[in-house]
Amino acid sequence: MTVLVTGGAGYIGSHMVLDLLDAGERVIVLDDLSTGFRWAIPEGVPPVIGKTGDQTLISRLIREQNIEAIIHFAASLIVPESVRYPLAYYKNNTVNTCALVETAVSQGVKHFVFSSTCAVYGTPAEMRVTEDAATLPISPYGSSKLMSEIILRDASCAYGLNHVILRYFNVAGADPKGRAGQSTKNATQLIKVAVEAALGLRTHVEIFGTDYPTPDGTCIRDYIHVSDLVRAHLDALLYLRSGGRSVTLNCGYGRGFSVREVLETVQRLSGVNFRVDTVTRRPGDPVQIVADTQLIQETLGWQRRFDRLETIVAHALNWERTLAQGVHEHGRAM
Image 1: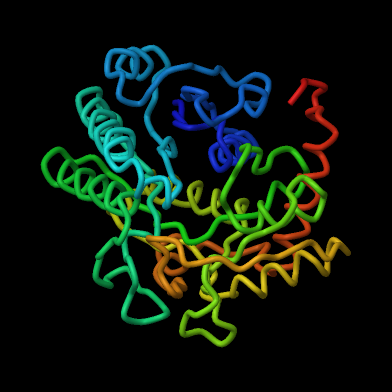
Image 2 (image 1 turned 45 degrees about the vertical axis):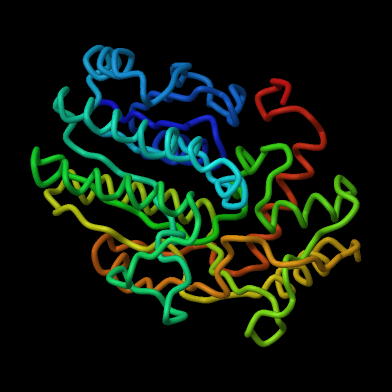
């Protein structure tokens, strides 16, 4: 049996492929390489270049490769960009996911693990968010993911597609063994931006708003190490295979750090006091959001391994230095 990883050449997807291989799984990667990298796909894993909305391609893959599970990462994911180009986000994130789910149902795929986001909550009433909190997204990105969740749940009720929806909080860090990391040019994730500034790859870092009702005036986020996140996906797959019911789960650590705290940590660990500018707020940014993680621990038995902010930043710094060298561990150019 084979696991299909969509977006497997991207940041989180490439880490998922490594974790599946480490677990002895057979893996196929589907990616259109619009933001992913061919070199990020490990040797021996068949790469298929294409889109999740291509139902003819996906149907053939499922039949020929005996695919029994899909882990779906492929998506557009920049909140401010989604505000500027909402229709593109609904097309890529929602329409293509609908097509993928329809194909999975028609071809008899047994299990589906979906990459969702805490952006579906919008600005929650409580700082610590449980899975039954109101879903009131404030960006097209969050709305596109919530629509996809609804599609998956309705398909599950109608056709029995067993699934786990994982709502990510802020993903950061890199593979502890140095095999993968965040490699996207002009990335917007705070820790990625900060480590680039620490290594001289950016002139400065911007703080979007310092007048929020938080202790230091900047937004608070729950940062989760990418390796712990993909382990949650593997745990979800094993849970479904063992007969677990469809469920929606938060993925975070249940602890928040402000923008200023993150920047100070990167400066301290890198030894570089890079320039930090303050600018106005961005549209679509909630004040603070932190995961309640009780349900994922109880349901999947998931355990955190890299939950210190210093560890997340150190791994991100190590990967950024690897990128600067320009050569992958197998000798392939990055």
